[in-house]
Length: 255
Ligand code: ADP
Image (cartoon, rainbow, N blue to C red):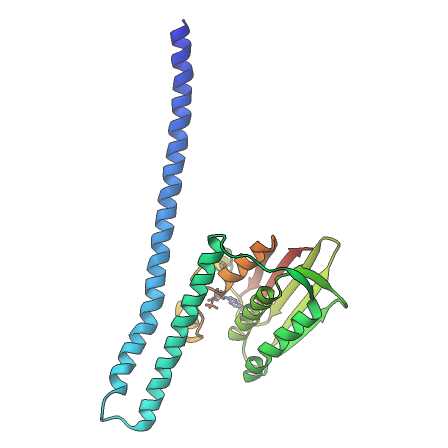
């Protein structure tokens, strides 16, 4: 009797163990697949600018071309090299954040001064398309945040709004607070994002339209970085959009 009972007990345990191992194996396979896809994306993202550099370097060294053409090709080479540098820097930052090697440096920060920095930094670019940035912020608002990193997130979001908006458009930032949270809303009236892409746009290298984005010089990592930085603040970042109506990003950070 005892042995039967023991067997049954053991069988249950073995089944449970088998299920756990199966689940673990599935998770590992999933992670392996994700890692391979990520490596393939990195390789692809690096190969494209390298192909440009190789091609234009070839042409630029030809004796038959004019000095003006040579300057133009060297300029393209510099831009592509800069793109690779940005890509590598962003990848390193993401790797650090995901390895938990990265510590945000929180300090009590005046939100108005943070926004004024962001305004100054984005203004020259916004002027290129005569896009107007308006900022609405509660007075004397402060929060315990990593000033540099939150500035970086806002800068990235505004640059995205700029990239996907047409000339003479508007970008609006609204900041408010409650007892518990700081809320930052960034709204534009640009191309917008299709519904089916919305759940994916915070993933590394995810782009709505690869060809469109490539011509706009993005790395496809900006939103993944924003997501990780907000996550390190225990906050959330979300997006709402309709094609042709613009996009709206909402950041909520616990105070
Ligand atoms: P990228 O460097 O390509 O801009 P991001 O991670 O910043 O990479 O954004 C991912 C993708 O999300 C972009 O390629 C673009 O398709 C879409 N996107 C992000 N912000 C906006 C926006 N404000 N309006 C329209 N599309 C956007």
